[in-house]
Image (cartoon, rainbow, N blue to C red):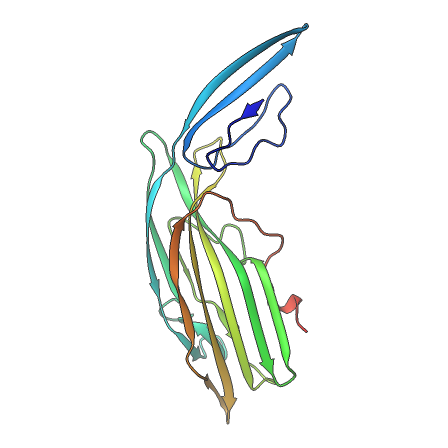
Length: 228
């Protein structure tokens, strides 16, 4: 089997056998050639696939970085018990004659936490919590970092990519149609008996782009696994 993978898909891992499963992940026109040899005779066939994809729009909203006690002392984008840090609402228009469902997958591109005293630094990356992160066309998030003794200053930085996935009706696999990059950073200090922001936090506004490559990760993000 020979597959034209010009429309942003990976070539099949297995190209021989009585049956080959192959998924396109981007819209476009592709040609597939297949040859069969039996009893010393070779037969060949070529066909063209027209691959369709949904269209979409994504509305985004972002809150502010703050220190609160919604769940113990924490520095957070948005609130656990109030306005969420970010919200993404997608409108997905499916190709005529097709049906499917949407979901979100979120990756932690990077997290860095610097804790004083003790000059402790923790980092992580990977899948954010669970796959999928949310089912449906909407998702919210309010990432936070716990503020606690013995530290008197905590400096944190988060970077995320949220992937909007579309799952065509079976048989098929979820495919990525868009991604949203976003993040934030801030510093909190302990003085007297309270935690408060120090300096000006930075919020990286959500930036949406088309995406056909699938999200990849090797671990679930966990900042406590890599501290030094």
